[in-house]
Length: 239
Image 1 (spheres, rainbow, N blue to C red):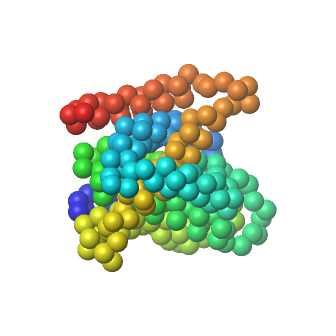
Image 2: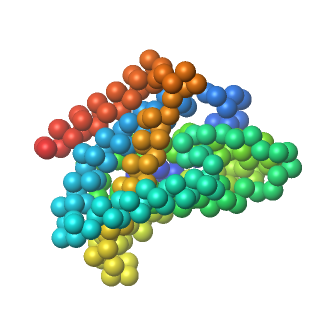
């Protein structure tokens, strides 16, 4: 298992959260462009790599059920996360206690997102997931700052979130190789759930529009760039 993937996942999320001390506006155009790029990239990678791999297994006929489960699971988790995984920042009342619902949902989301990396042999997925966690961590840090968390507590919370995707990668790698629990026969089903989550996250990002129901030119460029990079990786891998 490549240690550099764990480092990329951890430090991108950590950097996204710590950026709250540098970027005072919660409407950073750069973060929104990163979100659009990563959403398009994740969607393309899911369609080009994850779905074909999942359906090619011996239990391919059942994968669609697990994709639907993952899609619905993400809808359920968003009832608690309030869309923070999309980079959404909601203002909360002052003095609110620690947002346990948001934190638990985000950590589970990040853990599941790290799981497909066990099969990311050509490194197409790692950077999309890492970039996707930058706006999510920034949104989480913004909520904590609104709740008047001290810097030490904020940094610790962001570090816990940043560990979730590497942990998901580590666990799924153990499952896929049969070194954890002997449940490797369920790996494709687990990937089906993750695919459903990816489809929900990426399409939500792509289809979110402005008040005028128009996509800005910058967002369109970011989306097309994300898909282009995914296609370059797809064809360079010999498909």
